[in-house]
Length: 260
Image (cartoon, rainbow, N blue to C red):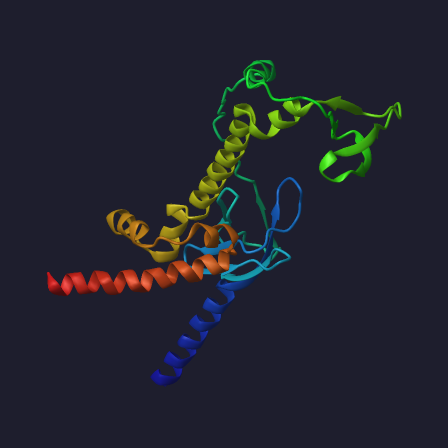
């Protein structure tokens, strides 16, 4: 009789547990555009389980009422959602995280100053060079190295000017043009650096590796993923790469402990 009662009690507890923890479905969307957010990590902090959203932003996760879900994705602010008691589908709205770069101003020679210095070289200015303006409002045909022949959409007036070698060479060899190219390269490098740091956010990596404080700092110095890979990889590929680094880090850590 006691065995039967114990069996019934265990069956009742199992049933109640199954009723309490349900597989909940939901979707992750951009709060502004309402477009689905793919490859977002949805983690149940109570059960320490995580899944990733599909290309359509959908996910399924075991969760009980009042469990806390942590949703993160590269380029978005991390969101926390408390699982409601009802059986409705979960909707997670994510806000993009925008970081602005500091403005950099590089000053160079003006065109008039460059012409003055260039003309001192006594270069023979015999044949004019046709230079075609290529403003956004112009349309026409490409003339190879000579430029582009176009016209104004509003007035249909041709946009073409004649300039000598001095003006043609200015855009290619002047300090102002070189500084402009350097500025563009600098902005691109800074943009790549900021994206790299954003994708390897320490808080996000800590959730993946369960490393904290000093061990997390040591791991970040140990795991040096190539910039090109980090910028192009999906969040899933990043997680796989970071966990690969973690295995090597733990082996190295254990070896040091044994030697110490």
